[in-house]
Length: 423
Ligand code: HSE
Image 1 (cartoon, rainbow, N blue to C red):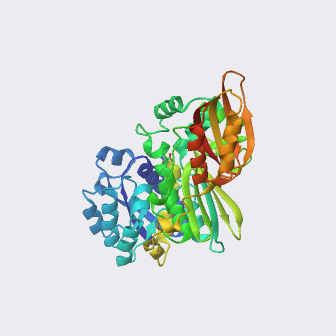
Image 2: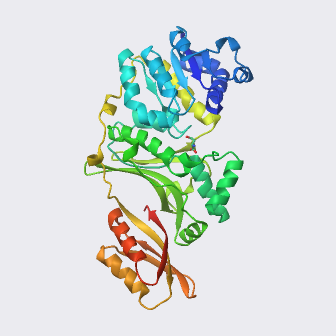
Image 3: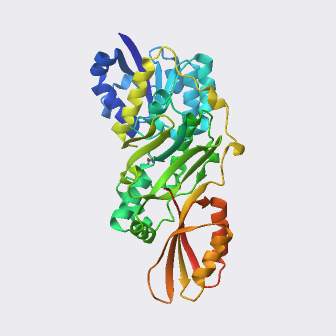
């Protein structure tokens, strides 16, 4: 039987979950997949974590170099997070001929070509299922099950923290700050929530998915990004009345040889399959020209779900005769490949003085930019009133210019919020 030694870097939540699964399923994996996966080494600053996981302290390595020199280690599994020293450690492992498995989305999205270059020197493999969507097998779906397709579109909820916050805001009619505080207390959001709530985390994952889908690397900084911090309970309530639910979506589309890539909150129709993805769950909706629509749903984080993706990578890696190569990642998209002036419909909420002609002034501006209204709503009959409208599809530039002009109109108190609507 093939024996495979793994070294696990970082015994936090994900590393711990991976160890638990590897130990519990060792015999089953032997029987079902013909490989005996042994935890041959671990690297962590806390010896007590090693013993708490039921591992023998003798496998605690002192350095990455010791792991690279260990002939019993075939695969190095990185669960440390952060850019460094993760990237340096994995580069060393690849140069020593060890295949790598990582759950580190930021590092992987930013360093994929460098890691591939290191891997090509020795023929070692790169495995990264756990970087995107935690336990959902979306990477292997894209790499091994979509060969018949030209991928036309990806729409994804790939950040559990923001999905949890938006779900609670929706269900409880609560404001962002209150729910964030509670989410932090419950461990659903980090003390520093910026990476999640400002959409960075989703953009790393979208970069990985889009690079695979479109066979060319999409650098993170070419992705349009806006977070959820400006979403209010008021917008969510009005959205519901209009038939929408708010989600932070990661969207990539292929159009006329160019790519549109963006992460931002959207209003989705309540009957869209992604609208029912609640709490901390993730889902990826992919449109292929042959298969049509597919959707994968599951837990995007957590010890065992992420450990599930990592163990799947380990077993998959161990059974490969030759590892997949990603030379296409040396070819990067540039600004010229990207549609920055993308098309969308828009929800706009304004407060205005209830004066004759105010609506006519607004629609005159919209007409100037060829923007058509599909729904309009005016709620109260006070002196200061909210006006809400939803446009038909227009371009981002046209909408931004129209909003700037609307803000300057007499009797417009404020444009309170603008939310893109994805049909
Ligand atoms: N912070 C991430 C999330 C963890 O909320 O989805 C998984 O990448």
